[in-house]
Structure formats: C-alpha cells, structure tokens
Length: 433
Image 1 (tube, rainbow, N blue to C red):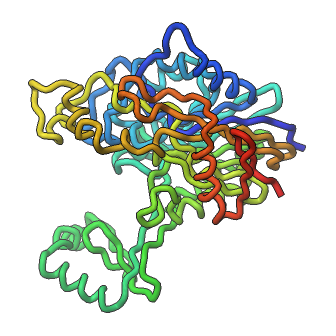
Image 2 (image 1 turned 30 degrees about the vertical axis):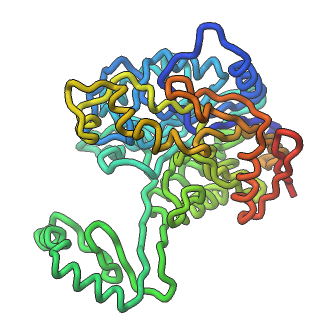
C-alpha cells in the first residue's frame, strides 16, 4: 500500500535575478503554499554558473544563464526536487552543463534529466520524505540535435546532454498534393544532398511509404493534417525506467519539457505528448508534469492520476540575463557598440511584440494534490500572476492572486479531456470521480 503523500509542482523557473534580501508578502504567500507539500517540484530553465561554459552557436532562444546563488532562492521557495532537461540545458555547452551539476549538488537538489551520458541523463532520482519515497524521471522533446546525451559503449564513452523524447512527425496530404511535392522536389533539388548521402551510405534509407521533402516527412492519406508519434526507443527507455522506479519508490513522477503543439494551437499538446503521458501512467507513473510553452495547457485525469500538459511559468525573467553572445546581437543587426538593453529592446520592438506582450505568459497555477495508495484523492489549483505590464526588470516573480481568469482558461482547455474544474472563490478544485 502506498502512503498518503502531498505534492506541489510548478512550470518553468527561468530565474536570472536574486530575490530581495528582505522578502515581502509576495514571496511569503507563495513559499508558504509550496512548503506545505512533501514533494515540491519545479523545472529549472537556466544554466547556473559563473560563465564557466562557452556559449553555444545555438540556444533555446535566450542564452539562459544565472549566477549559481539563484539556486538558494529556488531553495528558499521550498523546492526540493527539480528537472532541467529542456531547450536551454546546453546554452553554454558541456562546461556549462558540468558547472550547473556542480552547483545543483552543492545546494542539495534532487535533479534529473541531464547527465554525462545517456545512462546518467535518463537515471531515476529518488528522494526520501517523511511520508515515503518518491522517484523522478525527466526528459525533453524540445532540443537541438547535438544536445542528446550519447549512450556509453564498452569501447567509447558517452556524450553529455539531455534525456531525449524524440518524435516522428508525418504530414498527411492527398495523392494529388504528393505528386506536386515530388515534382517541386525534383525541380528545386531540395533532396539532392540527402539522396547523395543515402547513396554513399552516410545516411540510412528511409521508409518507402514516407516521402521526405527536405527535413519534413509526408505520406498520402484521406485525412490531411499532421500526425506525431513518440520515438520508439526513447519511449521504451522511459517505460523501462518507470517500471524500475515503481518497484523502488512509493510514487513515480515524470517530467516532460515540450513546446510542441497541436497544429498551430500553442495551448494544446501535440498528439505524441498525449500518447507519451498515457503510456507512462499505464506503466505505473503516478503523475506527469509538463512545461515548456510558457503558457498553461489542459489537465487530464487518466486512470485517476493527473497529467499536467503544461503548468506555464513560475518565475520568468528571460529579459534580464546580464550578458549575451555576439550571435544574439548579430541576429538583430546589432554590433559591438550595442549593449544588453539595446538587444532586448530590438527583440521586443520596444515591448510591442514577443512573450512580454502576451498576458497568458504572465499567469499560471500552482497545483497542490494529495495521493493515497497510488491514486489521486484531491487536486487544488492556486492561480498566480507574474507581473504582466511591468517593466522587464521587475516582472517575473510569482504572486498568489484572486484573479480567476487563468482558472477559467484551464477549465476550457481541460474539458476535452473530460476533466471538470469548479472555481470556488479564488481556487480551482478538480472533481475526482
């Protein structure tokens, strides 16, 4: 019999500033809620070090770095368990990864999803609580290809990186449109290099039922659109870890960082994510904690266990990193005479575009839930606001709010999953059947 255990989880903690030395009511209210739970999870979406790594040629958007002392602030909020497999993990390459591991260990965090090789990156991390033992497994589906952790061989060491959840995306079109695609490909030679690589053995032959147009895969079918499925080996690796963890812990949490969406609807998860989450619970996971798109998505109660498809942001300070590499400046036509403020002004169009202008980015929820004997008994959603409309150097800290708009949004997004949420005063209560 699994004991009764309480959980709190948040989405992305993109923290680049220190908390004030004198913490106010905003901090106290949020921290008090978090510290009530046995298990307290967040996703760390920055590397934390003193520029001990080299900036990568590619980043997750902003080269995410913060001084290691911000980990003390994460600790002060009450978090004791975190994931950091995401699209920023290798913003400062392998040295940045190694340094972040050092500081995470130094501050005593249980952290998962990243390692010196694939075995480490996919490793189960365990935490002992007064109520029992909990396991954490973390992965990301959003990353640059060279960020994948490499598997060890008897004769070759592995590669540092993230625990990946890759996926296959097939674009379904009519036979007529497929003929047009093939004709265009032959005309503009978009597949020429790819075909030569296959001929010379540098690239494996592809499925004969799939036509590759550049890097995109197409198939003919009656129902046109996009289908996505989890990568078979990555899915199986996650299931194997869950199978192991459920025999070694009272509860198993799975963290997944995923920007991928359904069609062009950012607030809806891609098909492969729904497949992935449900298979994880089928295998024995007790909760799936999603994050990544910087806005909330719906909640599904599957086999009496919660799937949070995205918890949005908790701390969001991507516009107050102190330094950026030349690549960022060049992207926006800036040079050596320009500074960090110029760079952020240019990217945001002086705060007229981008994430800073989207109110949904600056509101979210903190779920607090109770599980008993492996099943969900209670789930309450506490809305937070993160500073929409404030200057970029002020916004980004969470604050409990009485505004229920984000709860109403989650109500709508969760309804297609059969999840009912009642709003009572300023909290949301998920109806457990």
